[in-house]
Image (cartoon, rainbow, N blue to C red):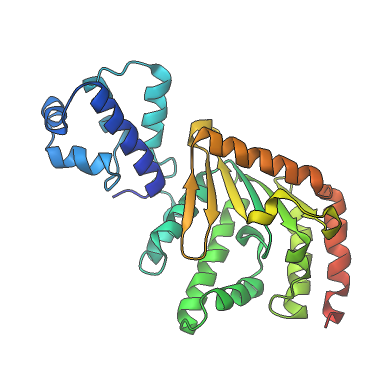
Amino acid sequence: MRNEPAVRRAKLGAELRRLRGSAGLTSGKAAELVGWHQSKISRIETGRSAAKAADVARLLDAYGVTEPELRTLLETLATAPHAGREDRWWSEYRELLPAAYRDFISLEAEATTVRTLETSVVPGLLQTRRYALAVTRAAVAGAAPREVESLVEVRIARQAVLRETRPPHLHAVLDEAVLRRHVGGPGVMAEQLHHLVRMGALPHVRVQILPFSAGEHVGLTGPFVIFSYSRSSDLDVVVVDHLMSSLHLERKEDLRAYETAFASLQASALSHEESLSFIAALGAGAKEAP
């Protein structure tokens, strides 16, 4: 099975199942038309198996689908743009990482724009190692030290996307509470705040702080991430984290709602320049914090 996200396989499978139904074909008849076993059709439609772009094209021909935009989208869903490259490193952690987290990393690695709201902790792409260690210890209390260290390694490895030749544009909106919470103690927090300022100086990273003075805001309902892709807006996805799972939202109305919410948060937040100054001022006094 290739490494594209399960959420993408599910989306592709559901659409192929719909098109087969519209063509009036059973899975058995479709399998006959393309010369496959029926089980392959079933695995693709349920998202259990990946499909190559050539496989998708073959099915679309059998279903009489000629619309260019639809064909391009579905063939794109079947194509892992970075397949075979080193950024599939997370497969080495298959036994450690839940499938949802592996999906998240894959979506992140392929995105051209990442918009994230955080209300409790610094986004993973901007964390220092010591900060990540403190967060991970709290998140997986009781885990063996080796497991904790491996999870931190994954967190730090994810940050390589920001050092690529064509890195994604990262826009992070952080509630002021993220900066005020002394994760790991004053020294760790001071280091983290200085790191935020350094990362915010990169041309493809934008950080905005939602100050307490902004009052209530739409982000109070919880953090979320919007992944966008230059190949097609139909590939965009919102990821909302819960305690034991993640929710992937791909319907256009859901995407519009979260994009509107993020724009509202941007408008309520300090500007990028004001935010970096705010973070730097906090960092200057962090070591003396109680």
